[in-house]
Image: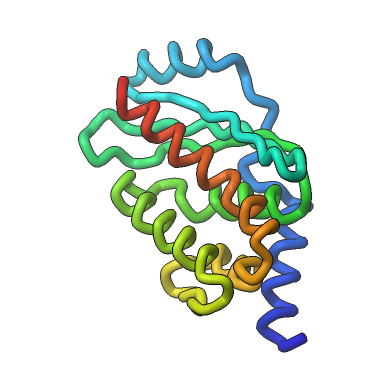
Length: 162
């Protein structure tokens, strides 16, 4: 295993244990009411990987403007180290970005994962999410890594519809 692969493996293991952004979620109705009072839009998405049983519920809070900032990003979930680390890294990577920037990063991440190892991850763009570059060679694991990103995408679409 190369030094870079070892580093990426370490990043995934550390995030699967630290679980940045993982909390016990309050009822969604309470979060929506609080967000609305502050001029924010709140939505969440629950996603399940039917292949392995991993699951994640991701809640996003967006500012009130057109290209809103992702002001808060929290989640809860259960599953393998790849899905849990992916949710943790997603939280660190996308919080504070505009929805346009977050979608561009999500598209870059998705393209890398679907490449089956043909696209080298760009750490300048993806940050710690580049650690999942090796996962792209294992189609069954791609679903695990994409799970929280799919939840994010669905939650943003829901939040923007309000």
